[in-house]
Image (cartoon, rainbow, N blue to C red):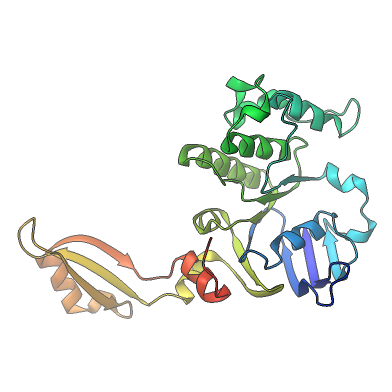
Amino acid sequence: MIDVQDLCYAYPGQDEDTIRGISFSIAAGEIFGFLGPSGSGKSTTQKLLIGLLRNYQGKLQIMDRDAHTWDHRLYQHIGVGFELPNHFSKLTRLENLQLFASFYGAGAELPHSPSELLERVGLQDAAKQRVGEYSKGMKMRLNFARALLNNPSLLFLDEPTAGLDPVNAKIIKDIIRDQQQQGKTVFLTTHNMHDADELCNRVAFIVEGELSLIDEPAVLKLRHGQQSVEVIARPGEEYTQPDVHCFELDQLGSNQQFIDLLNSNTVESIHSQEATLEEVFIKTTGARLT
């Protein structure tokens, strides 16, 4: 679906490239996380992929076509949910979706009606209320629904759960998984490492316009963590302080001390010591999440 080779881009008037020779490919049906600190080049890369920026160097293919050969017809195949939702505030959310549906051509038969999409993201009850009166979370859900209007093969989502409570965030993530099950491809840009870990088949870290790492979240967490388990056990009465024990994973099943601990104590929890994706992010990018 996406093939990028040695991609470089400099904004007009700048001496240095913002994107510096990055390469990656995304398969059909993959959820690909694009992670990095603010100002690292995430938004610039996405703008290049969706055709908002053009004068790049290197190779960029979208759905097996050179990006230079795509015209406005690209937007029949992709959906974009920007980080900052931009709606017509004096229109209702239903009118907003109806307006954007009209951009796909007079008489176009879209697979989902605006009303159906509003119901999917939990906005059907206030469909006739003006968007200017909505919270950020409601605007984000409308933003997400708009990206699905044309049943796109390729979705670009930037912070799709920002400003959402856990219930509505789960609704959005479930829809993203459903899109993948239908064979859709998702390019996900986020600072939410929990979302990236939960949703993405692979993630890429971009730092100062260069890709520093690409792999599966589970592989990265194991690679950057410790090959050990932590056992928390309470040896005495209920209110005594629990003890923390660490054991190497290598030959854990034959470690007599570990076996004795399991048999003679009240074990409260056992945790493998792989890194979190947030820890991988900080170690890889040298930046903290903001």
